Structure formats: structure tokens, C-alpha cells
Image 1: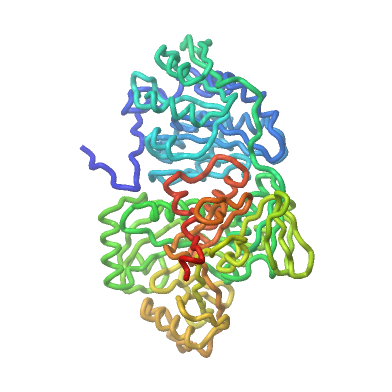
Image 2 (image 1 turned 90 degrees about the vertical axis):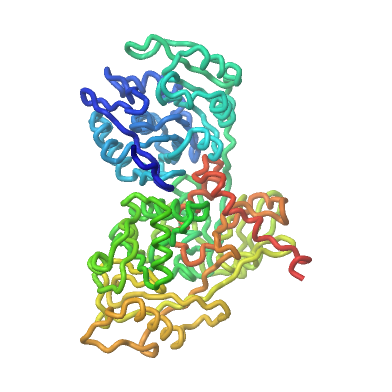
Length: 627
């Protein structure tokens, strides 16, 4: 008997192959028709949800959401994606596909299964490129240049529908037959399908079982039997209170204050969904904490797999997929070594490995010799190797993100105030040129509380961090990012960036010799063999560097969501996105995706347990409490 997998890993599907067709060993059923699985999908799900006709009616900036009860081989998803390409308007609109899978296929099995459909190869290849590691929870895949967003939940179906926030326009009720997989057809599951449906939502399913039909009738769907595909004589289709589809999605103008990595990823995300954005900053993109020449894509995963660890892991894997759009430009996926740089860290990593199970495409343990070979620098210890991580050029990346036809910029003037007026937000500028927007997202780091027009205050703190620029000839240039009590990047041109200090009570905005010396001392203790024997080890007075101020919260967790005046009164149309600390490059892409979901009213990419970690209410402190 196989040992059960520890979190966050999830059990993959066990397949048997008969005549080239995959069959579930666990459920004893095929994933698709032996006759023609693609035509079966088109008949059952596309035709009986009227998708080709409905896709043609999507407005600019709008979206359409399909929910599915079993991802399987992804064939249904690819068929819907292909239909979206053929029938949806060419203007910016988004297809959301929300699917759940308790026993996901491995990448190898998925590749073999989808090879059966040559006409889907282009789409299948893109899906396989973005296919997530087999870990529990929610994975958001952004495909087709942002035209298609796949929200893939690996886990139990009822957990998925309880945790996810979305309204479907159509349902693909797939999965194996009710007799073989009864958990997928429980009354509670059907109740949750109803809860995630809007008036006019349609559904289709292979099954024609009477109790399933009656359950959906009781849930409020108008149901009917219709002809099935091939040897399957009958199937079910339904509609929830047939009516014209309402358009509840948010529209109107959006302004984003702050053009660091948070503001620029959010602006780009919204623009790619077809929404015009005004990006406001007193300097320009990629200044402040996002202006370093190099930055590592890094998180420190907790020993316990709790909500905080899950959020960090989700952010890391999403960021790795996101930055691949700038591979070999501003993103360098060299891999990253997390050194066991002290006895305490060595013990922590041992506990981490004992209590958790991570797929190898996320991380694996390495000994000292392996670590030295992977890093290209002699190390004193082993550690954890993250093959999909690496380093970025944050300042250049921010400039690239802000360069989009739907992003207007207002750079070079400082925001002096923000006030609601007549259902809109008025942004006062020091140069006297106000900006008016229906919704505003504040992405201004530790300066954000100064802009929030609310009683009391929002608790954020700035922590000084100084990086040092090491001359390339002075060191053995690593092949990968190395992290410990400091981080070190491979050389970029004539320098390699290391740092950063963590100065809780220092607000000096200029680099100091003392901070450079601290960086060098810590780096030398972490990698004593780093410095080239042909060059003298540089001292603090010999180095250039840069100071930035990280914005952190008291619980060191980021913030993304609507702003509340006090504990519960929402400031309508005002959002906050900050508190990313030293992990901004890792958290920004995922949280921009989540906040864009909120701003557009589209399906959320995060489950409820992770959303709670981001809420802005926890920052609020009344004047009375402060005094």
C-alpha cells in the first residue's frame, strides 16, 4: 500500500490505457468517448450550452465564465477555448474557465492524452507549458495573451465550490458516472452549483439519471432530456430561469496611484482585460522599492503548511509563470538556492522536509556538493533548490509593464489629496491638474495611509533596506541566486547585487558605509569562498548601492482589497494594494490578478481562506486606540 502523500502534494490520477484511450484505474471509467471524445464534448457541452452563439455577444471588456466539475484531461477546456477563439469578438474580452480535479493527471499523462487531438495541439502545448505543479489548492493560469483564464482547483469538489468566489454562465457537469463517482453528485454539490449560478445560467451533463434530474429541478433549474452522443442515447441539459444575461461587471475609469511593481502589474493586468487605466506616480515606473537593478524571486516557505505558507506558494508558482513572458529580457530563471546557512536554518529545513511533500518542479533538497555545483560557487552547506526561480530587473520590468496602449500615465507630479465627490474619486495633484476616476487603487507603499480619506489610521511601517553593488571582478559570479542571511544574484553587466539590510529604526534615504560593511560581513559569513583570489575583498567605502523602504504590515502579510472606513463601512470604489515587504516581486503578480478580478467583478483567483489574509480591515486603528 502506498504511503499517503503529505501536504501540499496531491495524489495524481492512476491511468490505464486501452487502445490509446486513458481510463481511470480508481473509478473504472473512461475520460472521454472511444468513438470521438472531441466531438462528444462539442455535442454535449458546447452545443447544449449554446456557447458559439453566446460567445459572439460578449461586449468589450466583458467576460464569460464556464464552471466544470472534473478537469480530467482538459479536453473540455481546450474545446471551449478553441470555440472562444473562433466565435468571441476580437476585441478585449475574457473567457474564465473554473474547474476542479481531485486526482489531477501528471504532466506526462496529460501530454499523452492530448496528443490524440492534433487540431488542438497549439492550445494543448500552451496548457502544458503553464500546467501547475501537483499541489493542493487553487492555480490561476493566464493563457492566450490574457484572453483566457483557467482557475484550476486541485482538491475535493465541495471544498472548491465552498472556497471559490464566482458566478458561472454555463456549467460542464463532467466527471465520471454517478454510480462510479457518487461524491460528485451529492445534494450539497448541486446546491453549490445553484449558488454559483446567475439567472440564465445553463448546464449540460452526460448523465440522464433520474435522481440527478430531480435534484436540479428542486434547485430551480428547468431540466430536460435530450439526445446524447454516439451510443449514449440521452443526456441532460438545463437553464436557471432563462433570461437575458445581465452585465454586473464593473466598468468606468480606473486610476492607480503608485508605479512600483504593485501598481505596474495591476495596471498591465487591467489593460490586458480591455480596461483603460491611468497610472499616477511622482517619478515614474520602477522607482522606490522596485527600482533596484536586480531582485530575487524568493519566498521562505513555512514548516507548517498553513494559510500563510499556501499564499506564499501560490504567489511563487504564479509569478514564475507570469514572468516567463519576459524571459531573457528582464526575467532570468537561473534557479535559486536557499542555503542552510546556520545550524538553526539547517534544523528548520530538516523539519520542513519531514513535515511536507513538494513536487520536484517546486523544490528539492541538495547536499553541499550539489549546492556548490548548482550555484557555481563553493558553499559550506546544502539547502533547498528551487529550479523555477531566479532573478529580475525590477526597474526595467516596471517600465515594460507600464507600456501599453490602454495605460495613460501621469508622471512627475505628486498626489496631494484624494476625496470622493458625486460618486467618483478626485485625485488632487500638486501641479493643479486633478484626475477624476470611478475607482482608485492605492499602491504607494508605506505612503499609502496618507492618501486614505478615513477616520483613524491604517497601520503600515517602512523598513529601510540597503543593497550593495559588488564589482564583477571581485567575486566568483554565481550561476544562480543564492539566499541565506543575505541574497546574491548572478552578475548583471559589471555588478552583482547583494543585500539587503533590515533597518527597523533608520530612516536615512542615502547609502551608508556602515550598511555596506554589514552586507559584506553577512555575505562573507554565508559564502566565505565567494571572493576572487585575484582581487582584494571590497570594503564598504569602495561600494555603490541603493536604499529603498519596504512597506510591511504588523503581521508581515500583504494587503489587497477594498478600503474600509473603520471596521465595516466600505469606501466605495477605493482599493489598497501594498504591504508586500521584501517579497514584492513574488507577491505582486498574483495579488494584481486577484485585485483585477475584484475590480472587474470576474471570478476570483484566490480561495476564501487566502482572501482573509489580505483584508484591509486588519490594518485599521482608530484614534482612540492609538492614544
